[in-house]
Length: 293
Image 1: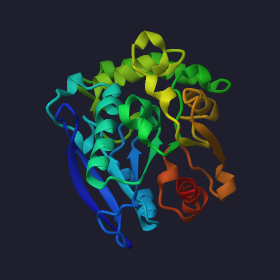
Image 2: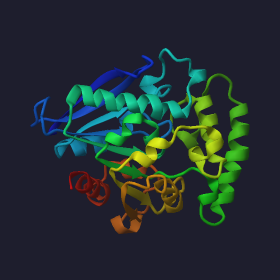
Image 3: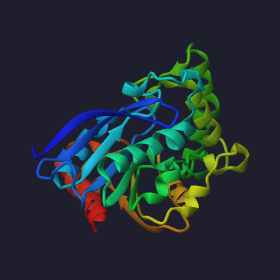
Image 4: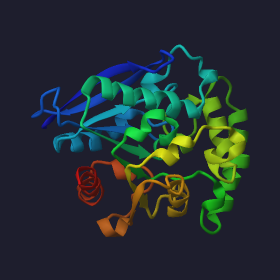
């Protein structure tokens, strides 16, 4: 192993304490004027430990990596904001912003990059300092509007948004919600409700009626890689393209991966972060090449 992992905490602007882990290359000193730091933004309800394998891989190749939990999630579950007040927008506006500021103040990297998985790819522009990213990887992510899903899939997703989730949520009491659809851990219920409201709208969080400040998406000029897995039901390429259109001033590249191209039976929404040699060579290595190019 040629990297070390260290658990850290940092605070958002409202003093909510967030838990994180930093993966550092062993061969580089803590303060390197030429340092490259990558922040990983998690999927909805996925704890930061899930990304330890790709974080370690990137650290072994010279990139310092920060993974963190959003407020209300896993190690950042409790803080000075009541769970009932936590919304999905806070994960971008406050928590991702805090991660950027922590990296800037602690490491002052020459190069700052970002990898957003699923929800982590949607909330980027909500963080005011996201315009500082030099490169962005949007992996298995897209606009969550059911209208963009191909063929009959759109009606299946609409049924989930309008019928399944409301019924299941009504049967769970308290401020948190747990569903296999969202990952293995409880998540703030009102964050789920806001997510559902966005998903039922034609243009997701970008729909004007939601009154979300989306001005930063236009201001981002980073090189963006949009990566889609063909058997990922959660984020088809149509949804990815619907998200990428909100970065009109960024240089964009797309990467469409099939399980067959990596000699795998399936990859899906979460498989691109599993520790498999085929995944390393077929997904992680191209991501590394993009980040270092």
